[in-house]
Amino acid sequence: MFGYINANQEVMSAEDRDTYKAFYCGLCRKLKELGGWKAQVLLNYDMTFLIILLSGLYELESKKYSFSCAMHPGKKQFAYDNEAVTYCAKMNIVLGYHNLMDDYADSKNLSKKTLANSYKKVYTAIREEYPEKVAAVERMMDAIRDAESRREENLDVMAGYMGTMLGELFVWKDDVWNKGLRDMGYYMGKFIYIMDAYDDLEKDEKDHNYNPLLMKKNCNRDCYEVFCQQALTSMVSECAKSFECLPILEHAEILRNILYSGIWTKYEYKQIKLGNRMNKEKQDGSISGIRD
View 1 (cartoon, rainbow, N blue to C red):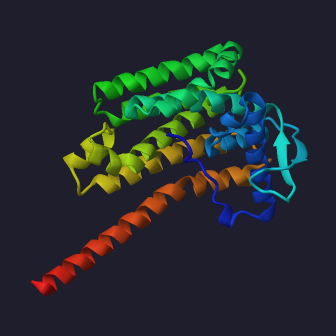
View 2: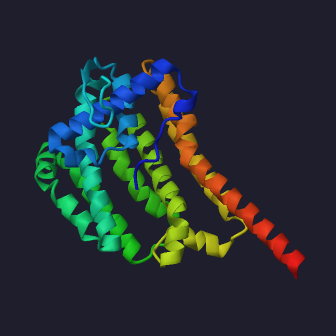
C-alpha cells in the first residue's frame, strides 16, 4: 500500500541526490536500531519524504555520519540523523506492521503474519510513546477493513480513511503548522490509496478481490483512465497547495521534485506498460485480420 512517494532522481542535482540518499539511509539505519534487520524490510520512500519535509520545516540540525553497508560493500556510505528521522522510523514500523497484517488478511499468507508478529514488542513500545498516533492508525485500518468487507463502492470514502490516517502522522507537533501538515498528509494519503487501487486493478480483477476502482471501470470503461488521472491530479494539486503555504527553504527543491515529478513515476510506468500492451493487441489483431 505504501512506497509511491518517490523522488525523480534523474532530474535531481548531484547534491540533492546525495542529500536524499543520506536521509533514506538514515531512516534505514534507524529502523535497524529500533527493531533489528527485520525492521529494515519495512523501509519505504513515503517516510523518507516526511523526514525531509519535517527537517526542512523545523530547520532541524542533522548529524551526518558514515557507515558500512552490506548492500554496498567496499564503499563508505553517509546518513543523516535527527529527531524527525527517529519519529518517522517509529511511524514507519507502525504502518509497516499494519500493511503486513492487511496483506495477511487478503492472502492468508502466514509468513506475512509471522513477520508482523516479530515487530510486536517494538510496536507496543511505540504505542506507549505515541498513543494518539497509533490509535489513529488502528482506527483507520479497522475502518478500511470493515469497508472492504462490505465492499464499499464510494472511492472517496475509502481514500479518505487513508488520508485521515496519514494526516495524523504528518502532524509531528501541536503548533502553528498543524493544519498545513495535516492537509498535506490527508491529500497525500488519498493519492496513495487511489494509486494503489489503480496499480492493483488488473490483479484484483483477475483474482476477484475487492477494489473500489472496479466499480468505476465497469460503470464506464471509456472514461475510466480519464477519471483516474483526474482523481490523482486533484489529490496532488491539493497536497502541493498546502506545501507551498509552508515556509520551507531548506530541502525545498527535493520536496518539489517529489511532489511535482517523482510522485508520478509509477503512474507513468503503468501508462507505458498499458500503451505497449495496446499496441501489441493492435498488431496481433492486424496480423490475425491478414491471415483471415
